[in-house]
Image 1 (cartoon, rainbow, N blue to C red):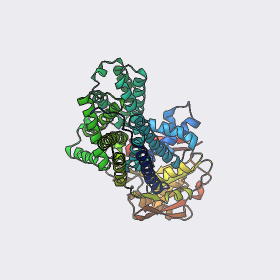
Image 2: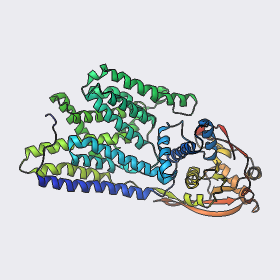
Image 3: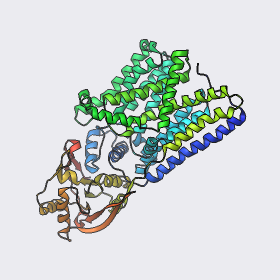
Image 4: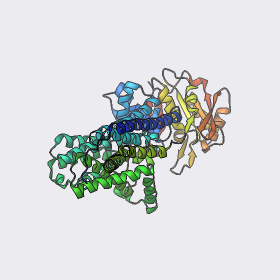
Length: 560
């Protein structure tokens, strides 16, 4: 059967469908609202903390040091706020963050709002790209299914690059679908190349566009595209501009390994874990309807010669999902579910194809009962959204209060953070950075300056006694020390505790802040000590080693 625009239902069916669809979209927004409530207000850790810090660094460079050496600025900023991720990850996400901060300010909440706007932008693209071919109602259902997906609920309020990668990937897919239908469309070719490079420079997993570039024309039955000059033009642009950063970062030793052998040596067990992850990354019914939509589009194109633009877009979406799964299986770069976020919008497109085909066939078969056809996609969409559920409530608090318990002097403060795994250094770094207007602090991470910690988490203290450590802290002088309460995760923390409690004249207890993690409850306490001698003095130069992940480089910050 050749795919045609949807059969027009009677006015009653259209009105009923519209009301039900609006209810579904409201339900998806409600799930997003709940995700915001359980996420906003918590502190950042892990990759989120690194992404936020790197974005603020680019913002500060554009605002205060544009034209100066970017390498020196990065190294200096990394001493102040040692969580820089540029190099390990590509720079596009941080550039977008920085531009957004020029409008919204360099705050954690701003970064989270940027993610929410990105998710909204993808949903809008899904709606607009499907509206003409499938109708507004089914396009709206597809956008709602996208927003309700658990991966999207989580990512929409996190400071991560995967959603932005998905945004650029979907724009590249739209351009590529136009190019396949009109191979001489140079604007589509250049558009695909631009968006593909943007995606690749946002996250390395977007290199799945490589196999996609060859697979999509075959699936869409557009093999003549390989003879088009724009095939070579688009391919050359993507390879030239997409790969340069990765080779430079690998050559300097700060980026992802570029040797295929690094990923190919992953064992079968790891690949089975990844395949299990892929099988459950989305609501089961959405996966099933997406698979049926792909089969329907293949049948229409290959069996019935359907050459419609809607079928081309559906086949391009199917090619991307298959390419990303194939790419990650062969080269397992990560085992985090969020790496599959760029597949969510194409999955919604595939599901929409099945919704529309099912509605069309039911309405033709039951012309005297048009409500049956109108209700079918709504019912399926409702089940998908209902089974998506809500993300678990996980939020850590207390770090913001810890950061604000320390003063924000105009020339910055020298702070040592020596905390446990559960109450980490990363949260304090990002909270100070988010709440300070001038970004003049220098935050020493205890795991960097007081100990050598290897990949297994074993630490060797750099100071052999508490007296030697106290002398170091007073000589700097360090104004604030943030220390976890016992039991300690690292050996050097015992030395810090003895050093700061040994003589009340040197350090006095400023505050004690409980750390709460929902839904677990209290997980510890942070104690803040102040050195009165550090209020009016700070070192002219701070030299500090970076951590294991940064190759233990020695960097300097010149205090102005």
